[in-house]
Image (cartoon, rainbow, N blue to C red):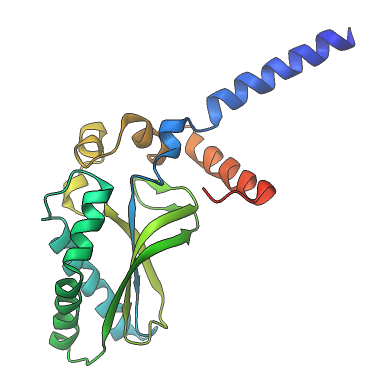
Length: 200
């Protein structure tokens, strides 16, 4: 009897985890995404408003790049880094400030982030870090590639996400469903990372 119960419980746990834990395709969201991290000069109302104007101008510029992969996006951003800095500095100057702007491209750890129509799990992502002035103000995070934070993804349906470079599995991972399943998946990822020291 004990053996039967053990086998039954093991089977239930196995099939439950099989339906909750992300697939390999879903794990690849980390390798398919370029995050955008904008740091304001300070928490003053003016500096926070300026941060959003810089964000908008940079996203509008980058979404015009003709790229079909994360690698192409990073290459294009690196090639145009000085121009992107100038664009940001022009926005700052137009708003009557003299803050310098720096852009750093590298790996950065992000906590789980929930946006209006999608969410991204915690983990280490390739990140474009835009530092305005002292960079001491509240941050703004989103996605630079695929362009989920621009008009390219308006509508938030299957076709919109697939058009900006996500696979079906990645789309299912980051978009909310009625059961809230993706939140469970994200929590499992975070627990596994803490327990086993995994950098995913």
